[in-house]
Image (cartoon, rainbow, N blue to C red; front, side, top):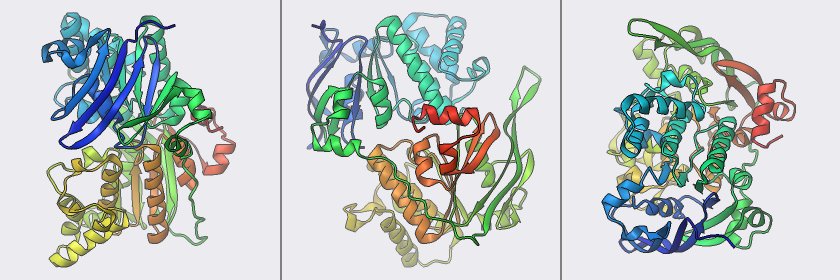
Length: 530
């Protein structure tokens, strides 16, 4: 029989006003154990995790949260401050909003060490560099002085993980910790967490929608639906013999291939010829070096086609996508849209071309202005590109596109035009981002990790929406993702990038069944798609 649990949650209930978001939830975690909590967006899993550290504002909480035999619900705020970071660490889902943009990542990691372990600044900086290296960030001695915006999405997530691990906590709460990470780096991070577990007996509470990760990595799994814990058991038993109908439905959700064949006469809309992108990088007080983010990439995109771009975090795939939209200056090469060169276009002609090419970014919570209503967000492009529209026609177009993406009054989204992004779930916010891009009737969409932050069922809904829009409107997609299952479901062709180079390109199913390069084989093997 096991000893007393490290964490013992009993009858936890969390309410916001009259709305119950966590309903009588009980579970425990022992030292060295890995427990996952899964469920759809809005199921209450993140609120449950945040409640452990008492980070839920304006909520009424009942029940008990036992940690090493003490009820954290009875702790003062001063006692919680001592506990947070030192005894219980947390990796937040959205590192761009969790990291302070005004401080370097090294400063932020070092601050934790100075506060909880009393290290001096020089020692804290050295330890921060070591932690960045352990989480797989390249050139950590340079990137320790980078600000969050200077890192890729995956690198920011790794910096957040380094900060959470700084004080070697007894319990680590991981809220979607591998959302922004490609499969190879994900495997590296999971190996690091297992190594730390062996060293210090750390327990892990995983909040995730990645069922493949749950099955491979955790000891037990709990399933939440609408605030209730509907199933809890040993991971392999739950996966092989789920007892609850909701669990069975969740496990059955997988990306399905929805690719329509291309017309033989489909024209080329986007062409990149030997595209190169470099950035100056400080190498001392008075000197700098060139960092080659994209070394040389050539590609073409036909009308109605989806080109998938995959690779590790920092491989250059997002930089290439921004360069193809003329949102990133080139250091060499050329980019054409409908046979018109755009990388060196004047501001006026480029603005006219903008309505023909749009982008949907990875994190809708960061890319949608929190100060604008949904009506203002979706209609902003119309106001710029179609200023002659009457007020009635403008609103009619906004309502029509919101209806097309599944956000309208008749779908229960009352007053959708007057509501703000924070009032919607992650999947709904991504639909708003898609509506903002598609309302201008573009021909090309760059989709930068559009489903990485979504749970499996909502991800499937968004992918189905993108497939429907492509078929209905003849859209072409450049689909940037680290999720190879999504790429296999959506892309006609795949381009694989590593360290700024294109290492392999080809038809999707052919590449997945017979990859030619060792790096591609490693990616597919790590994703368990071979």
